Image (cartoon, rainbow, N blue to C red; front, side):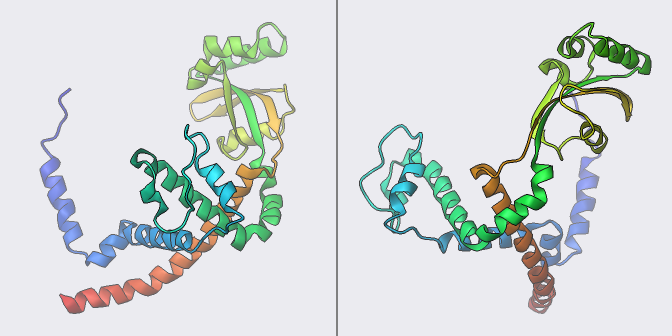
Length: 261
């Protein structure tokens, strides 16, 4: 396929000229790089500040080597211990090690706030599976709805036959997902349905959706949800701190750049 690239050079030159007119700190800030570098640095500092006691070490080793397919080596997790393991495993073990360090730091700093945060977020953490059939004609949508409530055919069969979206390949099933993920109009409908209920055709953009609630799973404060909530609390504070710090740093960086120029 031949792409129309003849006008790329003037466009790129124009963009480069626009970038050239900005001081480097401002350009890096606008591109999000100052924030990205700062966030990465702070995260590394957090991880490096965490150690594990001799009592914690056996459980940490178990989680590090879980599913690796070979027993862990006989040494402690002090110093540059990653340099002493098989090079093919180092990347995986480093990611797990950093995850465990972060998880411990989060527990130490936000563990007491998780339950209240969970209560505030519980409704949006609920998981659902729903059925969707999308068609372009309101007449066809009404016909499918009537066939469903009349029990003539199953939702799965009608989705496979008529739906024009990707959900036809899953027999109409969408999810599981948290209730805040669907389109707001779809989410509003699903909140009114009991399991098994079918909603009349919903006009949305250029489509008509027939929706059925298949499954609803209340939120639980399990290990995965707990870690998610810990991360949310951390990111809230981290973003607020980065906003304030970069607002204070940028003018100084611009002044330094101007004086050096």
